[in-house]
Image 1: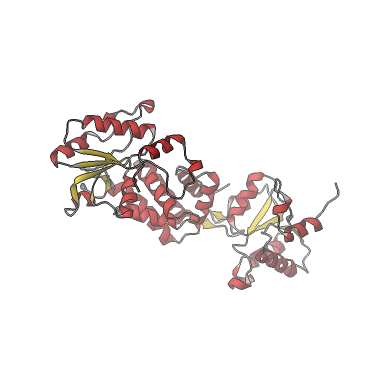
Image 2: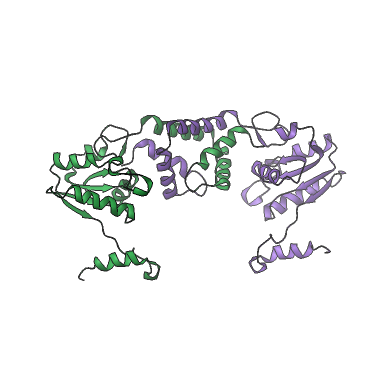
Length: 197
Length: 197
């Protein structure tokens, strides 16, 4: 009984992660209440993502240029590379403003179960960047899951004979979390990673 | 550091109800992963809402025609009108398929506090429909809040001298809800609305 244009918006919204039928309806009806100008900007923003957005030739970050602003920034240290799974992870680290090196986006993690091998993710370019720029350290900022661990071990192994230092961000108990809610694997990592105080 | 096209999508998504910064980012990154075709349909759907969607001349429902499919349906009983606050409410009642009359969308509720008077909502058209179509019953399906009650009392009053029967949907305890979580006003309504079993 809903007009087709509304049904179509609901369908599109339902394709988004975590948006079920009810939420999609609620959002669609909110959009119906938007001004024509706001609807135009919304549609334009989507078309800009479709038409302008590409991936950085160097690091794989999303970008509107062939080289992303981070890779193009001469002020940033190119001797240290943060290796992340997804472009989104870059914005998380950039927000906390703790790192002034470069990034590398793998675009996935090795997962034998899902048939994703090393050749399916952006590792070759990482290796050639390390050689070309004489990179001194790569920091693996991948999630501590089976896939993340496999990927970290693989990268560590192929760089065995290289001079680059390979580190990983710490696995442990998040601040504010009660230890009773932490799984035993994380506790093990937290114990192994203990530090003097 | 995010590309402008991504920032713009995040801004648009944040205008939606219940979508905060973090969710907007998550949804925007999901949209970046959409195919070009999917992005095109999404933008097209928004533009269709902008360009095609209008309000039914008779009942105020959203529609792509001047007369909505419900008002145009000769099979439906035009002697009984369900009065709702928002167009969305129509789809809720249509889904449960209990009603084969017509609807009327007020587009708001009387709220002296917010400066919304009877002239600001779609009441005049309701009165003329009742006269013109010799409507026998109007069912007020408005939320039982101060604004809803005020609006129901107002409509009841202006139809005092008319032959139309004015009813309201029941206020009471929703199925599956424990009575201890129900406010005293609702309990009072539920008591007053008690029925023989």
